[in-house]
Image 1 (cartoon, rainbow, N blue to C red):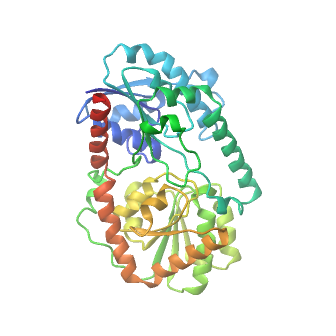
Image 2: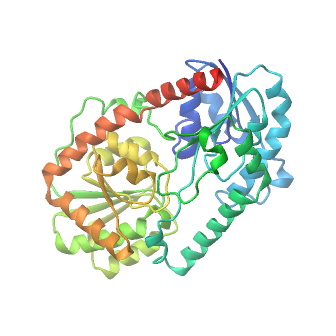
Image 3: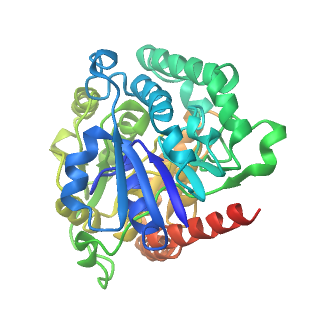
Length: 408
């Protein structure tokens, strides 16, 4: 087949959305003639690494419309403008080039429109989705974070119910691939539910050089302190403040535990204050950002990953942890808990935040004390990753989706 893919985020050897875009299109190129539209900003890194049969097209918003964008500030507004202008720039090319499938791949938010769904002949939107802040958690957040969450919810409501291009996306898509969890508040309108199908968004390429080293290794045998790990950007919704309070409580009870923190972010100072107030800072090591090789080594030699995020898609770090035999502590309320719960970790639930906090504590305590359970979840994690979450498996599934859409 001849496939056109809109992948705003697509860069080699990156995590999150850029990694999703890059991994998907490279795997798909083994089966199809693939054309990819992405940001001009990605061209240099793509051309250094692209060796497959992929034709890349590039576009960026004119500078006079994007001078205000810096780093992550305003990136969603920038993406919205990019999506509209890129469509009008490339729609004639797409409609006149005999593509079998037009596929919107990234940005993977189901509240943002994709005008390429108005192209012909067959269109696929996704995987897209969006997680909501788990309600018991929302009530307990500091005011500054509540305000951010309120703004986020207002924006989503506007796009979900008012913004016209998104309604066009719903009407025009032949298939919508959904990666949200069962907890997500937003449900697709009844008139399009027949074309919504669940689909995993994130995978891992275990044939990359960095992962080969761990291919035949058995779980790490820790003969020293139990090592807990926080690995993410240090921002509130990743659960880093919850993890800091959780470790502080556990560190007063267990002498044989330590905490490694990989990442940087706005909440680092608050986290340090929590550790200092609880007099456990000497058990904590902030290592900042590390490269992929160092990251995998830390994952493999750790005992428990703390990741109680409260509105997250399936983060790449979860899959990397699974590959490295690392059991995961999460909370219910997003797709991570759907994957983790009783399979490769423990997910805390509750009707109140106090219940959730207590369950997080009890779950982590159980993993610290129960070496047999840790080993069981470790082995489950590796097997589940290999069975369901490699890019090879996900791309085979996407290839079957393409065939079905084309034949319908």
